[in-house]
Length: 218
Image 1 (spheres, rainbow, N blue to C red):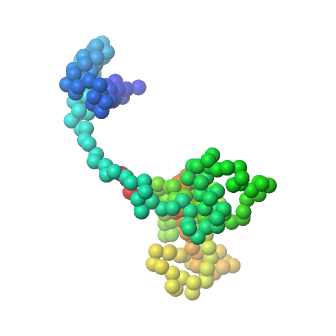
Image 2 (spheres, rainbow, N blue to C red; image 1 turned 180 degrees about the vertical axis):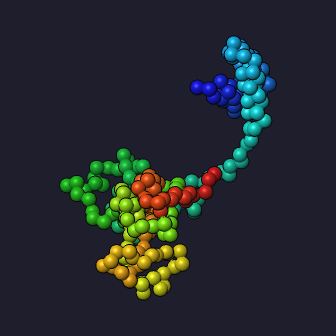
Image 3 (cartoon, one colour; image 1 turned 90 degrees about the vertical axis):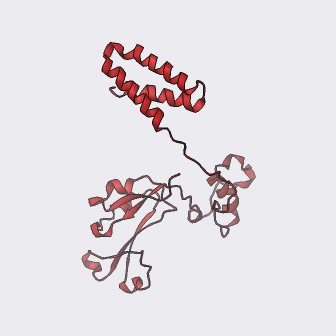
């Protein structure tokens, strides 16, 4: 591929710079010599462009300061709520934390049956991006609701008076269906249940559902 000669020497210099296997000036000289040897048959222009890319890579390196992360910080939410049943707090929570292999066999139900309604406690909150409903473009087709494999998007039809005390962030539309005229259509996304799979974005007509970052970047 055409970009490989330019990219690979730059990556090699970054490797030497970060690992300090070779001092910066020595690594630069060695790579410049390797570029001339490898690409001189392709013309001096290609050699000089690779040298230029190498120089730009060296000039563009910046250190990003990161604050130390305390794994026991108070900002770290619990795996499940303290209000969850004991089974959820011991068995389900261990599985969600990736510690399921450490559970003894005696902790599991002997007949293999699972308590009902435990998914309401499994709020993993793992999606880095979540869908945002653009109600002004919505056709009320409900394709996004049907496509969501985790039921993180739910549509409701409610009477107008139910919206009177609703928060300003909860949007609604007049229902288009003839047999529900006068009602309000509400589409809600549960961020803690979303996995960020983007299926809703793919099936939504007119790009009614769009993706938005839910967590700040480092």
